[in-house]
Length: 438
Image 1 (cartoon, rainbow, N blue to C red):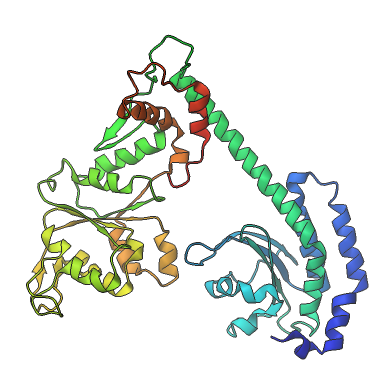
Image 2 (tube, rainbow, N blue to C red; image 1 turned 90 degrees about the vertical axis):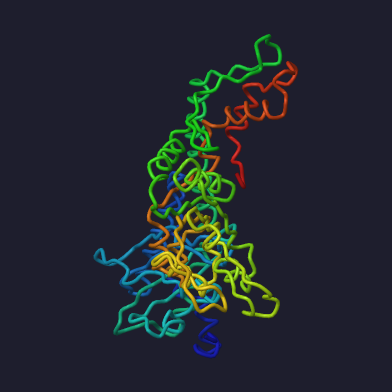
């Protein structure tokens, strides 16, 4: 919306400069009143005061601030936190839907939500301002359905929020830093407990062996751990490996999802047959169907002979759909039939082929978010997610670090070299390190 054209240039500028002097003074007083608040609480108090002034200025039913996460690799955002101030304890009338999140850029200029989504029943005034690292705050003011908002309201809210934007950012940064320090202190206490339990005392000055004392590991397949959370993951693998239940393995890149999938296959009744890994994100969309379902001679140019796809070749065994969230929607539909009926039709073929497979799937995405965004089929999700196995990242498996250090020493042939040792402080540093990419 063109504010100058809609409000009139003079009215727009006057609203910007003057707003309403009494509310400008009140806002300044509220801001001054938060100066003595404890620093780690100032953000909430400051926002609550600001929302109260906005609520009063616009005679509104409800005023909210939404903390919006940075965009992910596909540009999607999430609402991390909502702070509310309302009349009579009223709750906000609706939620921030995907349409609004996708239009955050346009909300850098105050707008009525009805201009973005005409189906919005109540008058809602919006304004979004940046924080840091791609984070944003979104202010929503819900007005009275009968009165709506004045023409100058958009300029007014921008002027009022701009007055305190720097204070909001400062208070938010301090809160974020305080919470980060609390998490680090908690992690440090955990690490000290782990170090004390494992009695790591390795020093270049000592005459003792450089073999690091480690806790007894719980091993399933090629995965070993002493970490309680990871032990539970491996226990779940052991419980489910002899079943044919489809399992969705969820975790960050580098957390060992393929090794866990292999553990589901090895040593079971299906281990006499193939274990195939399909890298869903690595195959070109034009090739995926043929690679999975196979093709018949003459199906397309270059198809000089029949070709059995992964599913047919692996019948009797296990297939891991690695990064299944990258599959195109049209392939998802055909995969669903294989999961439901155990039947597939090769490209260019007329016959149906019966296959007997156990399906495992892995993903770094939240597939339920992809379902809500229309990028992943809901029925396929529930077929794949007979059981969801959550794999913790390495930064949450700090108890395993000493074992990994010992394994590294052994694999690098350093165990016999007494000059190659890890000090306690070095192991501690490794345990505190966040391990991006795992």
